[in-house]
Length: 113
Image 1 (cartoon, helix red, strand yellow):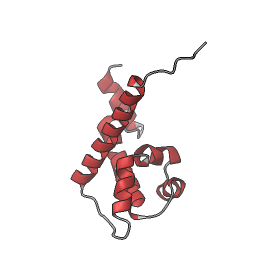
Image 2 (image 1 turned 180 degrees about the horizontal axis):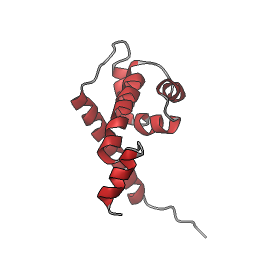
Image 3 (image 1 turned 90 degrees about the horizontal axis):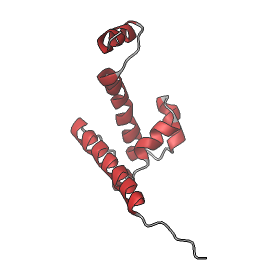
Image 4 (image 1 turned 45 degrees about the vertical axis):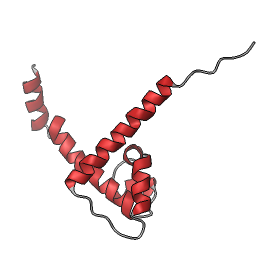
């Protein structure tokens, strides 16, 4: 069975993958970011409200950039455009990559004998 046949079979069974799955989750990610920035709900409360796991919420809101956005919009509800959401997601990804690189480059502690 080639990839095309497999994709068609999964579609027949009601399963989504690739772009279709990504589009489905993008809606939830937008809602996660909106709730995090505009409300004082914690990660577990956001997860329960949206029917996703707390781990999924954490994946998107555990970012210094997004925490700053939350503080900036403390008293004003912010509705993000799709372009703004894309930029936020890119910044979150970049922040994660930079932290990972910093961990790799961090010198290891040497034990003294």
